[in-house]
Amino acid sequence: MIESKTIIDMEKTGNNLRNYATANGYSVKDIQLYLGLSCPQPVYRWFKGAILPSVDNLFRLSELFHIHMEELLVKKHSVEMCEEFTFIANDNPMFIKRMKAYISLLVA
Image (cartoon, rainbow, N blue to C red; front, side, top):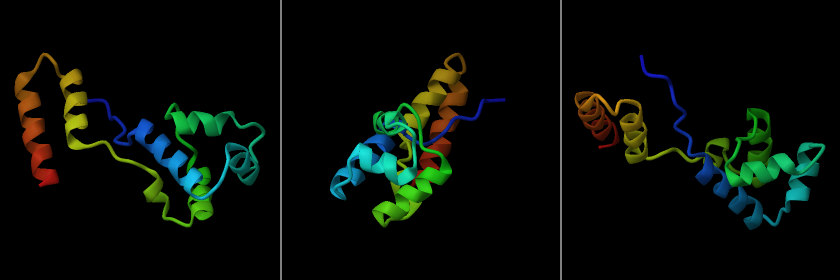
């Protein structure tokens, strides 16, 4: 069985969070205070894509930016997912071929 992997692109999601904050005129300190965080470090880590905000914090950020929560998250593209499968199953070329075919059907 293949280990489940997230399909959220953490780096692009971090950039997305930073862009929404900047576009709305919020600093890291503003976000820290709004969310009631004891220090700004988590916000910096979110912006770098090192970690993701909790669901509660994602929800509150979506309210702050006046968007849906899903708009803050960026999914990995099918090519990136294929690369992960390639890494997982590098000794099984038939598995890779089948997964690429399946994913191309999903995104068509």
